[in-house]
Length: 231
Image 1 (tube, one colour):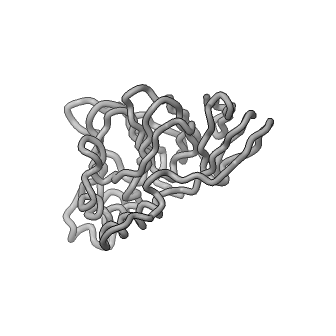
Image 2 (cartoon, helix red, strand yellow):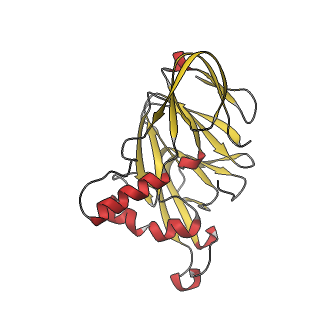
């Protein structure tokens, strides 16, 4: 599927991959007969009906989702974005990849995609609407998106990072605690929970990720970038 050309570019045979969903503006060049069309993750369009909370959640989901394009046909497409480092994740049966929308370069179109809450994701369905809304202030303060993209099924995805990747194994008795601004993705059966590291009174007026921490536990891998810089 995806093949790394170097540390910042991947290429993929679109026909063999069964179609590729790529971030808008990430296509560098292609050869062959390839067509591109706008694409949207289900649930990320902000069109949720119902009361004020439902509409608010829909708007937040829409804001967290990067615009994407679906590539189909027969040809090889090269992808890269803003000179960022790339890393290919081969999806295994039963595993789930949760990745910040701004850190997802491309994925094979056959993967099932949705938008979930990162404030309390995994296990029981993302913590529900109220749990997601309670995480809004924390997400805004840290730069960590309140919602994140979830991928599952058979295929592959490409991650983006500033300054390279650190792969942190998750599975011991203690959680892996990550600065939300350095978080890229979690792969496997990994649950994430956004927690305050200091009291709310101490955190007022602070924009640093140290005021909040992302606790990761379960079984899998957490990808962290060697920088706190966000796009």
